Amino acid sequence: MSGYFFNRAATATHDPLLARALVFENDGVRIALVSCDLTSMPEGIAAAARVWIEDLTGIPQHQVMISATHAHTAPVLLSGWSRYQLDGDMKQIATTYSQTLPALIAQSVAAAVKSLRPAKVFATIGQEATLPFNRRFHMRDGTVAWNPGKLNPDIVKPAGPIDPAVPVVYVEGEDGKAIAVYVNYAMHLDTIGGLEYSADYVYALSEALKLARGRQLVTVFTMGCSGNINHIDTTSKRPQKGHTEAARIGTILAAAVLRSIDEATPVNDTKLSGQSETIQLEAIKATPDEVAAATEARSKSTATLVLAKAARILENDSRSGRPYPAEIQILRIGKDLVWLGLPGEIFVELGLDIKQNARASFTIIATQTNAALGYIPNSKAYPEGTYEVISARVVSGSGEAIVKSALGLINSQSIP
Ligand SMILES: [Zn+2]
Image (cartoon, rainbow, N blue to C red):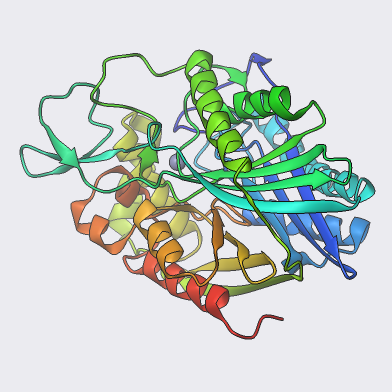
């Protein structure tokens, strides 16, 4: 299982891991949005899935957006450098699964294409401010700490904001029955832990929405810009790990979705389009001594911050310091409804910046999309350090470069 820095062998499946696909068609143009109950979406797997999807459905690759929800109770994927040192059965299982996955993802899109039917689309932005917390804190000693612990007396204040928005796209058939709902929220999916596969709070979200709108409803969830956001309330000592916590979160989020659907705006401008551009993000360099130290730390240490730093150094070294290509993708319905796909765990400040400056009524930012570049902090966070910054493979300014590219695409006058 993936999610942390040590090997875990799954013992069971609590709830099935799914690829959920939403396909829109208008005037012969199709776009596809896929969300997978996985920790990340490696570029090699997304690229292979897009080829399969084009073969099966004819949807061009730049009109397919494939995201991972970032669930931390999902299988390890082997594609490119891996932080996991697997051997024996674990390696065999992860290899086979990773090779099978692109075709499975494509099957979800093919199934959605098969069930295309006339529909109305509604968009809205709900609010739910009680669940997410910024997990970086200014501490009494002047440092910034990551997840400093419940009721920690040395916490002064959070080091950044949250984004309480719940963008929702609701799709209804001509019979008035719900077909699908696309939900996006800026909060980490890491509430469960343990050794059973699970979609994390997306499972409860999906079940609650089915109870309210019918078993046929497909919920497609993606994680918003939440590289520094999770569900842990440091002001309370209440335990927040396990399936009951995931159910609490999924249910409250479902309530926010249901409240907002009732006030949703019909999307009448229904021209479909997709565009993407790739920018290069500079990789942080390491000296040969740092690489040697990282190699040793990886085999000896169990400390998260040490392992995170070693992983960053060794992954960048495995690429000989080459920059990381970052695909910035948009799919849109008309001028006002835009999905932006970004390839990593983006800090909330960067997402808020995009939303505030996007000239579209509804901007949905799906992170962990089409590639897995890891944490993308904002420039302000780099000198503050700690976990996400230590983990980040790309230099300060990369996040702002992504914002600039995204706004360029979204605000471009020449909508194709
Ligand atoms: Zn994460």
